[in-house]
Length: 371
Image (cartoon, rainbow, N blue to C red):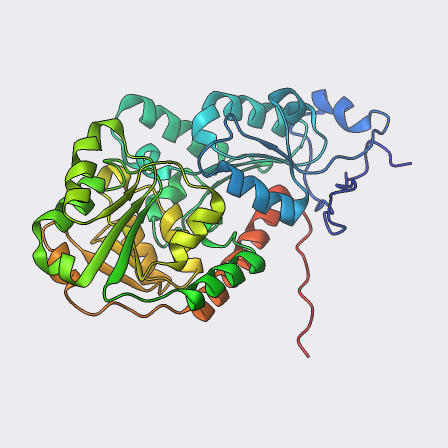
C-alpha cells in the first residue's frame, strides 16, 4: 500500500499508464504536513474544473480526456484531490482559482489553469483587470501553481507577466484522424462550382465580424462574382437586418446552431474561412485553429493576434484591413493543404501535451524511436 508520504500516481480505468507524478514539490509549511502523512487513499486521475459546459469547453474536455483520462469535477473535489488539477478557464472562476491555488500550494499539490481570453486581462487598464494581473503575477512565485495561456508568448509576449507557460489553443490540434479523413472525403466528393466559397463559422455576431462580412458581400460586385459567402451559425438578434440584406445580395445564411458534423461539412466546402474580427473579437481563434488543422486558408485582420499567429506558425492566410478586404480578396488565395495542416496539428499537439505535463507535474511521455 502506498503511504501518504509517497508521490501520488494517477490511476483508474480511464487513465493512461504514464501519468506518474514528478518528484520535487514540498509543502510550503510544516503546519500542513498532516496532509502528506495521512493514511493512504486510492490515487486520483487528473480532475478538471469548468464552471460552464458551452462554447469551446467540450472540445477542450474531449482533448484532455484523450490525453490524460481527465474527468470533470466540482470545486470540492478539486480542492481535496491528491493528484494534479486543472481549471479549464480561469476567467470564469477567478476567485475560486486564486483560493484553491493558495490552499493546495500550502500542502504541495499541483494546480494549473488556462487563460482562454488573455488579451483583456493583460492589456485592459480597468482597475479590476489590473488587480487580477497583479494577483496572477504573484501566483507565479508558487512552485505548485502553473498558469498557462493558449497562445505562444512569441505571439502575445505580454501574457508572460501573468503566466508561467503556454500551450497552443486546443482547437489548433484537437481533431481526430477520423474527423480529418471525413473532411477530406467530403472535400473530394464536393462538386466545385464556378465560384470560391468563403465561410463565416460559429455565432454570427459583431465580435465575429459579421457586419463587415455581410456588408462587403452586399456592396462589392467583384466579391459576388468571385465568391459565394456562406454564414453558418446563429445570427445575433441585433444583426438580423444585416442577415436579410446579405441573403438579398445572394449570400447564404444558415441561422441556427450547427452540429459538429455539420461544421465539419462546412469546413470541407470552404476554400477559405473568415477570421477577420474587429479588436473586440481579437481573442477568438477557435475557428482559425480548426481551419489551420485542415489546411484551409484564413482571412484575418492585419495586426491581430490571429494574424501574428498565422505569420509565426506559417499558417496559410490572407491579411486585410476592414477597408481593404475586397481588394485583398481580389488576389489569389493560398491553396488548401490538408497534409500540411495535419503535420502542423500533430506538432502543436506534441508540444502542448509536453507543456501540460510539466505544468501538472506529470512524467513527460517518451516518444518511440523512429526506425
